[in-house]
Image (cartoon, rainbow, N blue to C red; front, side, top):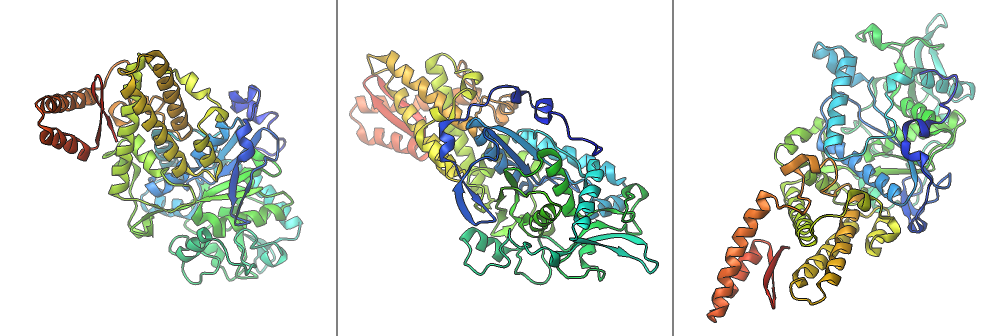
Length: 549
């Protein structure tokens, strides 16, 4: 891609939805988000009314994705979906790092072409995103497609006096170019290196677990780039903008520049691509917490040193941990996405990954998946029963057409509170409990039509809230997943639900006979046994009904 001109109308060319008028919900006035740079939750105001630009650091496609990788994708997918539900036009950019030391080294060890390996694992990541219901980005640029952008950005940094080219004994450029940290007095503002005030608990946890700006020695989560350990640097803090090739690097992994042959430093890639697609300043830069330092600190510095504004707000999703330790391949605790999906439905895995606020550490365990499966059972049970009672489901168009202003107030309040998914999920299950109560009243109430209207209103609200989290069971990709994430549309019961209905009905009939015979001990025993199995029994004039807790 050349740098001669910017796309004439980027959003219109790739986003058909951008052709429709923007109607931002009143609820958007209450949105508050955390900013890593300020360590504060503050009111969100977009740079451009009605529009939000988001850049999220994507994968370095060296090998297969694991659950730790995908958590960040799910977290920012939920953030994006909330902006969309609020009525904003969202430009969402997620990059692919397809040139990197690890890619080159692993490809060489496996006898592969580096670009073939990168593409293979890029497709694996895409498949994982799609399977788990992560919306495709507005654009997904590859680093290798933006070399002219990076070269131009580095030249601007050099021209502004914030970088230097390493030369050989003859004064010729070697291909190594470094950012001059000492020349940039703002360095450290993102991660508060120069501040002495006590930071908040989220930042303190991150600092304790690493990587930390205060840590010394090897960083097991984010090892030092060999180029950044070079004796050619003027200052230990300086970092590589461009790197001379290693002797083992293939010829097609080298690019010619005014400052020598080589390839980009890691940090320069995101600065170039975010500016290419989001322009001079954008609303949110996101990524995993392990990118906070040095990647995002360096990225902020070099972007501003080139003369461009940085992101207005930085957001970081916390890690997935296993027994308190960050999940990573290097620690041997990585769980591949295919292996997890082999034993759990995609809906359940997504629910588990998005079950806590994005800034909270997520402990991955069998119990987390058990709880997610129980949540699915409660959700699908209510949606199926309501659909049967109503003779059908609201259409997907009706569900997606619900504005944030029409959603339950407790759900909106939770999502506006720095995307508090835990609170939002609690609001969903509060609505489901109300809906189950209404369903149990249908046969007992003379005004059954009025109750049906209430059931439909509750069902619509539940599905709209679930959809905001990417979890409406009657949406793609879940509806196509069948038993691995789908749910009945309510006009027919699934075989599993029919079997459960038959078994429970048999128990309810036995309980009714026991009560008729005034054998209340036996009736209570049946009720208690069902309760232990997660079945709630409600008695009415027309008999007993059941629902999952």
